[in-house]
Image (tube, rainbow, N blue to C red):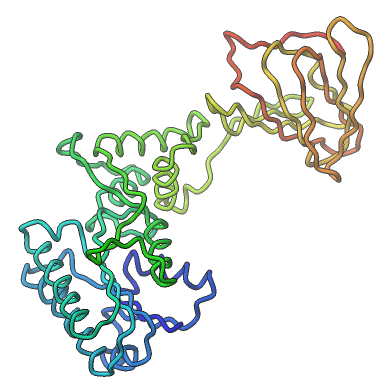
Length: 370
């Protein structure tokens, strides 16, 4: 399939083209402001589908709205008609098309032009009225509050929120791309009026968004992870990370080091427990304690050793030999005192999960030799 994409270097265009290539689409005609205008003629002659994403939303002069959002749409459709190419055409509009402002009026005019084209040619046409789209590669300090907030907060810059209660209707870029690819495959989320709809639209206040973003920044200090079960939080967190300065991709952890090795907490969550890395020097034994309710999972990823268990009140010792040569999970049940000993000549490296973060006021950890 030969696909013409206008606005190819814009936020939606870049994400869409990247995923189309991931899915094996190779004949992509990319058209943007810096494309030689003469190429449009050949693109319109050959295209099997047109995804019209080009538009103007932050012009120097308001007259540019109509020129960019209506004028270029007219040129595009006229060129398709010139070549009698009645392939499907999708146009990206905006929820502001129902508003009485220059931007909304220009997008509304573009919609009406497309519907006239449909009546004249019989070509299948699709109109998506996008709300605020957020995600990676969106330009900050341009036309997206989410992009600006992500960029500024990640870069320790101030933000301005005039009214925390202001509501935004938001859709995630991956959901937009998925829907546009559905349209390419003749499966758009289409209503009878030829408008198409995006399935996952989130309504959030500016205050909610800002608070979430600041909580993401604080996660590194407390070793937390946002609630990945919440779809909006998961998508906003992915967006926030894409705005991190390159010199902040990594951050330090506190290594608790002694002559036995080290213990380092990586992630601490209230609902998914704690993740840590334990390093034991050769010959060292760590542990010799048990828990009432806290339970753990050990995964040895380097070296070789043995994990020993003894049920409280009994004498039988159970041994479980472990090695980085065979990655497996060892459950540490409640009511069993346990330890781990390095049997090798190199460090024993163990990835550990505990069902709850360590609480010094309620450690649920009781010393007893195995």
